[in-house]
Amino acid sequence: GLQSPGRNDECWCGSGKKYKKCHLDFDERLEELAEAGEEVPPRDLLKTPAEIEGIKRSAKVNIGVLDYVAERIAPGITTEQIDQWVHDYTVEHGAIPAPLDYEGFPKSVCTSVNEVVCHGIPSPDEVLREGDIVNIDCSTIKDDFFSDSSRMFCIGEVSPEAADLVRVTKEAVQVGLDAIKPWGHLGDIGAAVNAYAREHGYTVVREFGGHGIGLEFHEDPFVSFVTEAGTGPILVPGLCFTIEPMINAGAQEIDMTDPNGWTVRTADRSLTAQWEVQLAITEDGYELLSW
Ligand code: MF3
Ligand code: CO
Image 1: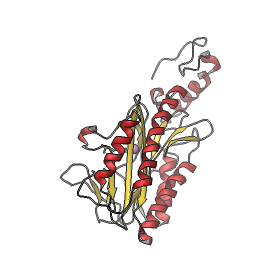
Image 2: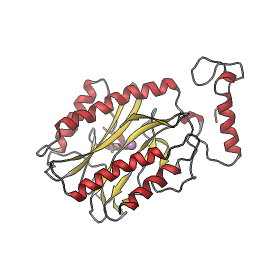
Image 3: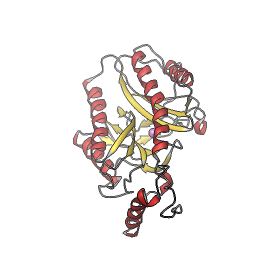
C-alpha cells in the first residue's frame, strides 16, 4: 500500500485539509477491514474528487457519442458507418476512441450484432437489418481519463424474444446498481444480476465482465456477474468501475474461435445482449459517471 501522511500533513485526496480532519478515519477503516480478512482495494484504485471530475469530462464525450449514434442508427446502416460516426464525433470533441489500436483492435468502437456477445469489429460488409439487435460499446479517452459505456439498439421492429432479452438485460444493470451498498461487497452486484437473469430464463456470460476504469482503460477489480453475495473486494468510496453483464437467451457457453481474434459469439448462436454503465462508489451508494 501507499504510505499515509502525518496527522497534520495535507490529506492524500487533494482536499487541502489536514489528514486527521479528512481521510485518517477512512484509512483506519480500510486497515481494520484488511485485518479482518476482507479484500480491500489498494488506495491507488480509489479516485480523488479531482480525478472523478476528469472522468466526468471524458464521460461527457462518451455519452455524447452514444446519443449521436442513437439519433442515426437505422436499417441499411453498416457497422462501418457507425465506426466512422464514433471516430469523427470523438476526435471533433478533443478525445480519442480508446478501442483504436488497443491490443491490436482495428476500429474505434465495438459493434456486436445478434449472436455476437462482444468485441464485434465494424465492417462495410455488415448491414443492419430490421429485426437485428446490436450493442454499441464506446470507450473514450479525454485528457488521459477513460470512460466506457454501451447500449443496445433494436433495429426497426424486433421479435418479442429479442425485445425481452434487451429489456431484461437493461433491467439487470439496474438490479446490479440497486445491490450496491457502500462498504458492502463487489460480489453482491454479480449475485443480483445473475439471479435476475436466471429468473427470466437467461444465462450470464462468465468469461467477460466489468472492470475498474478511470486512469486506465481496464483497471482492477474484475467485475464478474456470476458471483456470490458477500464475497469479493469491499466497495470502498472512490472505487470506480463498470457494470456490463452479457446475457444470453440460450446457453451460457461462448465461442472465441473467430479467426479475427476478437469476435465472441454464443456457442449455440442464441441471441445475446449487453448494457454497460460506469460508476463511482460514494459514501451514500454510487454515482453514475457514464451510461
Ligand atoms: N469496451 C470493452 C469494455 O467494455 C472493451 C473493448 S476492448 C476493444 O471493456 F479492444 F475491443 F475495444
Ligand atoms: Co467496459
